[in-house]
Amino acid sequence: MEPDDYPPWIDPGNAFRIVVKVEKYKANAEYGIVNMDEQQHVLWVDRCSGYNLDKFEVDMASKIYWGSSQTLSVWSVDVDSEAEWKIRRNVQFESMIKHRWNEGLTNVRVQVVDKEGYQNYFDNTA
Image (cartoon, rainbow, N blue to C red; front, top):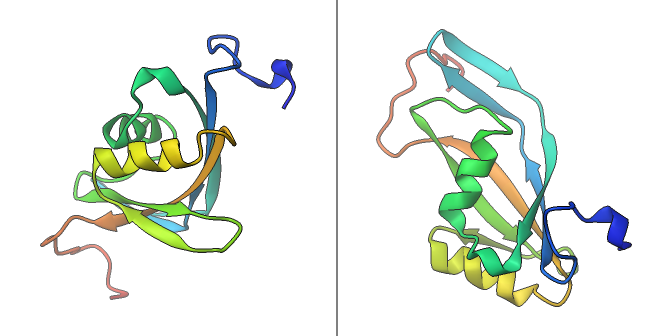
């Protein structure tokens, strides 16, 4: 990447890009179900900032909408082997970034899912 590709607030030597693919989902809004199309987002983070899963979820909340009865399911994606690993804890997210440190890029897949134990009363398709 050229230096102009990095956000101006990150030193190019510390810039790390997370490419996020959000699968098609149904947002359980307070007024009913909203069908959401597949999306893709790019997040830039400073590798020295201690970026983790909690911060990722906050950043994603500014990009996509999900209902209070829903949560994110995050998967690390190895584009070379097409293998995927579910990310459940901060330490796993940090490890994923460290594993791809030299490339300065990682890919993740995100699903919006119902929180455990939640019954969706609006959606009659289940």
